[in-house]
Image 1 (cartoon, rainbow, N blue to C red):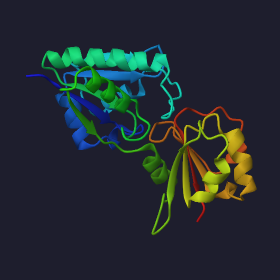
Image 2: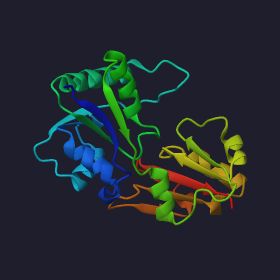
Image 3: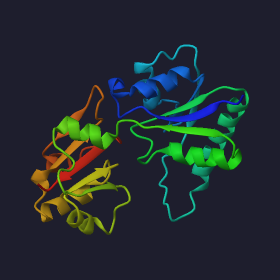
Length: 241
């Protein structure tokens, strides 16, 4: 009997935010394919998973996924595709041995996760593979809770934007919804702060850095951090009401 492949959302940082199902799936999976953004093998997702689940006895494979921009209307770059292909081949070899493989991913797999690219590549390689997605607590949900502000109420509209891509349409974005959540804002504040000032929204913005982690920071005066070197895990919530 062949094994199953699981993409497991481990939440934004706090191991206590791991769901019961995510913890069970990780416990039952003999192999963990752990994503690492850098080539040094460090993995935040692994740190979170090991904070909630006993990882002793697991076969842990650290796999580098490049943090390259992926545009849905363009062919992905070759480096990213190569990483997905290698991951799919690794997963397939263990599934053939009857082992379950889990890929722990930050936040929720449905939101800007490498996990779905790996799933698509695996299914293209071995169409009969059994793939399961385990949802997790999202960074935007955790940031909303940390800042103690709602994302949306009543008939309000919520818009989620990867700030790293937003270039020409930021004005339209700020006009179109009641609450806008900007993710991946590390290098975008220099563009965002002047626009927020133009729309008189600076006092309606809060930035949460490394939410759920020991060094979490909440900034309510984002003008003061416009030139600060932020961590990649930074989320900006702009709530008009």
